[in-house]
Length: 339
Image 1 (cartoon, one colour):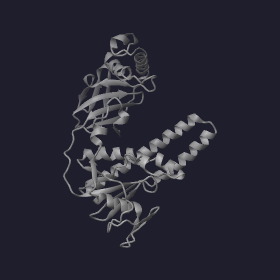
Image 2 (tube, helix red, strand yellow):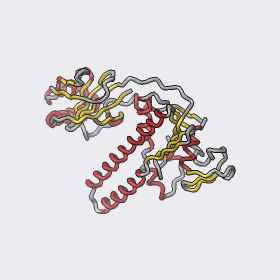
Image 3 (cartoon, rainbow, N blue to C red):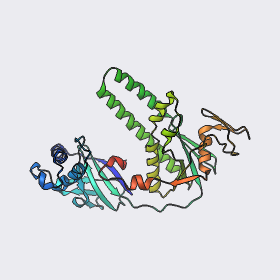
Image 4 (spheres, one colour):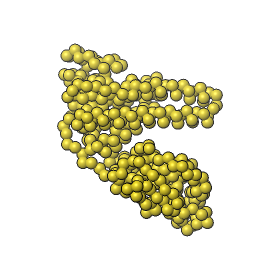
């Protein structure tokens, strides 16, 4: 499994990053693939080769937006006893505090503030269990509702996400009206960081619950939810800003680190079927009532119980495809642990 750890360094790489940008621009313009062709720029060949691979091979690349110093595995030395990483071509050393059981460092990318260290972590065997907690994910109300059918316990997480999206939506509208486009981007980035942080905390809580109860995790497969759901005009913004896939990725890789299985179930009727008797009841916003047995419950809680006991499995975790096979050239696509 590939993880990317983000560590702040205290060195000024302005000059080296300027050379890296020139190499990238040269690669895009002339589509060269050898560091010999950019030797005159003065960047170390080990780094120049990696940058050329990234930009010269990409036919769609038209300009350089954010180039980093990319150091391959063979140019990195690790002292696990001292927890120190050495990069001889940059005459640079970096201490680390993240987990020390990694198999190897795949590569390191450096900007002027952080080093992004991509490592291969050994995987734990997936535990075999027939007990699962159910997770209902929502764009309104609580973002994640977790239930354990054995104990009947329910956890509601992330109610603040809906308020955060609305708050920043109005802020962006006002900024757009006034033509403050630079500030608009800053506000959008701030919202993304806040949402990502909350999703990290929620996903950690979900996995902790699974570990404490020695259970697997069941979730709905929401792959085409935006295309298949009928949307009222007032509901479109909530649906479009819903970060369910980001939540899913975070839950998947954290569960995989602990050997917790994840199963996806068919999402149809999970919030309309009664979790007590199995009949289809009436759902009105967040209220659910069964006309057969009289069971009354919160609609999301009812859905999470239905998911936890559902036998309509449609697939295992997507983590092997999305995380383990992620490109080490792009740390943003890998999972990030911030030190």
